[in-house]
Amino acid sequence: MLKFYVMKRTEVVNIRYAACDVYIGRAGRGEDGYFRNPFRLLPGMSRGATLDRYRSYFYGRLRTDPEFRQRIHALKGKRLGCFCKPYPCHRDIIKEYLNTLDDE
Image (cartoon, rainbow, N blue to C red; front, side, top):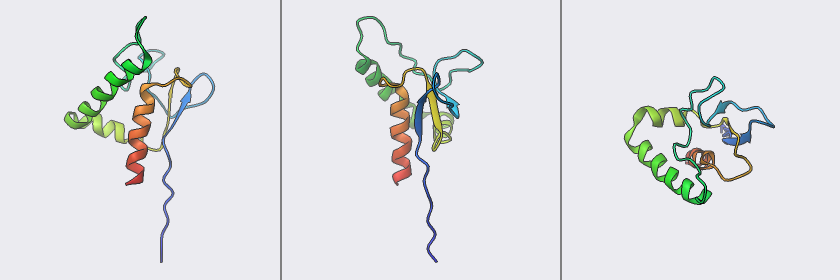
């Protein structure tokens, strides 16, 4: 007998407008900011440059930090929330990574 599994995709939401399972922004409001982007968007800096820095940081940390990797994998299938959506944000990098795992 064949069994079918539905893989729940990781989603991103703006917490101003929708509920999330895990907040992944900066610390505050009772959150520790563990999943935050450590690179701030500064005046004169493009959002893309900040995200390029985060992408390198994210994949490097996945390779070298087992606890980080485990905590990131635990986000699979959850609704990730921050304040940036609909703008490109570090959570898109996390989401893309997790949804690639779903496809394997």
